[in-house]
Length: 232
Image (cartoon, rainbow, N blue to C red; front, side, top):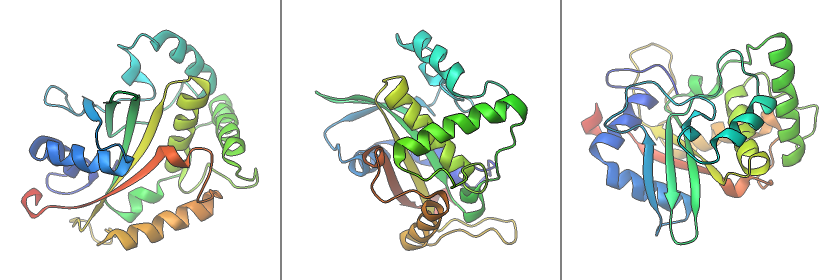
C-alpha cells in the first residue's frame, strides 16, 4: 500500500470502504473469491485499530497455531528489516471453509511496480531462498529475478506459498485495484478502468515469469473497485 493521503491513495480508499460501505465491500470480495455464501470477520482494519498495518505473520498472534507458524516463519523469511505489511486481514468462514484473506491494495502504477528488495547479507540470502522455493513450486524458471521490479508482488506470493504449503494454514491473497483515483503529485499514473490494470498485471506476470495458471492461481484473486465520488 502507498503513502496515506487525506483523500487519495489505496490506503485511504480501502479504509473508506471499510468504514462507509463495509457490507458492500464484503459482498464484492466474496464474489471475487467465488464464495458468496461465506462471511468475513475483519482483523484489520476495523474501528478499533490505529494505522499500523499487520506485519509478516503477526495477524496469527491470537490463534492456536501461532507458535508453530512463527517458528517456521523465522526459518523461511528474514527476521531483520521490514517484513511484508498487509493492507487488510480477514478470516473467511462458512460451513466448509476457514481461511485467511490477505489483502494488498493499489491505486496507481508507481506503487504497483514497487522498489527492489533492499535486504542485505544473510537477510537477503534468506529471502532469495524463500523466493526460490516459491518459484519452483509455481513452475517459474530460476533465471527470472524476483528481487527487482515487482518485488512486493513476488514476496506476497511467497507469503501465500508459506502459509498454504509450509505452515498448512489455508489462506488466499486478494489484490484490490482502485480505478479512477487522482493524486496531487504530478506524474502519478492512476489506471482509469479495469483494462488498464489488467495490462499492468499482465506486464508484472511476464516480468516475474508467472504463468496464467499455476499451483496457487486458485488462491490469488483480483478485485477492481472504482473510487467513489463520496470518497473524494
